[in-house]
Length: 489
Image 1 (cartoon, rainbow, N blue to C red):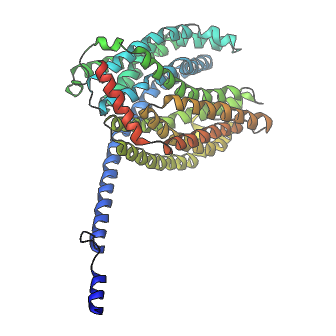
Image 2 (image 1 turned 135 degrees about the horizontal axis):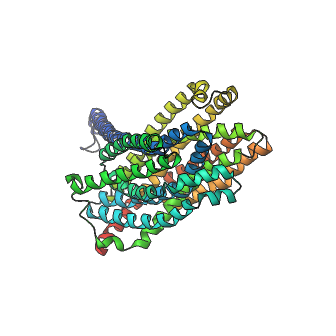
């Protein structure tokens, strides 16, 4: 009996229960599958992000190249072009960039749902809306000098800024089209044509600047005209590629009357996208304006302008990462793959952290020499060196929030992000900047500390939103929206 009982105790309760060796083998297989998925996702995102970072940097460089050419004409044209470009970014470029980003949601999810023809329809609808919006924006640019003078800016500098912006008006319409066509290609993971056309445009732009600024001596007008013509060159190349490439054969089937339908729905999402982007962009510009109210405003404004230019240059990397994750999340949700969207977000967060640490380290290492690239004055160089650690921290936080914001755009959460940005920058960031700079007398560094507070709140809010998200529900919602759109068309 004892032998029989012992034998029964040693008998497995279920014949299908795995042994320790089998369990370890299954666990190893699962980890291998996860590792393969992560490696494949990382490859996809780097393949997307690399060209997108380059495209962002190249397109941003057009305005900077023109200003560098104007800098050789004297201080007054340089001040006017810089002020005009800043005004143009606030009142035009950032608005069109924000509205165009609505296509990251619409085209990305449509592509994931394999409703390929809808990419062309969404893009044409966006072009119509953005071109229509460019008309009132062009009037604002036309009266740039009057607006700046009304806000108390120097008359001579404002006059030069007005001339610069008037000659950039033709490029405003081209910029609107570029935002739409770039998103059209980006959301179908076709980014290398954008890289090639942007690279060619940049080279052509340098030639335009040489010819118009120095050869024909158009001065500040020539620098602005070069920007306008360069944007149209980019549009021309993208249109030729999209209409002739087999890669776009299923997504661009020609001009469609469907683009005139459901414009209000697109406008609703596009306005939320614009508010989301503009609230963040404008807060950084506001910090530079506030620096003019500090003691020794010439020093403070110079250093804050250097800081902002440095921030925007690094920001092009974050924009590339944000565009990549937006595409991946929208594609996965569009085909109903919630777990794929979550994996994409987790992989990109790791990439953003690694990139942020690298940028932070480089920024701190070059802190004592960075100011020398912009000025020969010891006072400016030393002040920039003191600012660089704060810039390093803000660049790290900015890169992290760009990834989370990109994921939000892929899901279509622009309304939520608009409220987050409003609270982060205008309830926390700007008031903290004023408190640190003017009450605690920390000066320009205090202004940038306020921006860091805003970035921190924004990051925490976006982390909370993503952590509390029911991704299965988001996938079902994306599939439902695309099915409804398909029925309507």
